[in-house]
Length: 66
Image 1 (cartoon, rainbow, N blue to C red):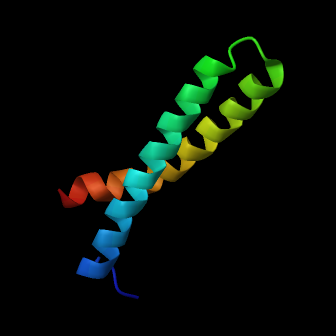
Image 2: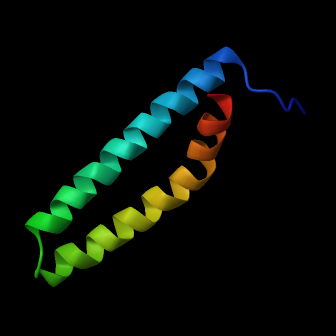
């Protein structure tokens, strides 16, 4: 098994991080717009939980590469 990250993989990870950040930002906007609407609040919490899980692995790798 190869433990190194190639240029192609590094570029893909950086793009994933950007997209995850955009999703997280959009979820924050939805949270503000849907304040007081239980279904929105519940689903935004779920979205933010998923983006956190994605960021946990990907962002750490990208940060280590920079």
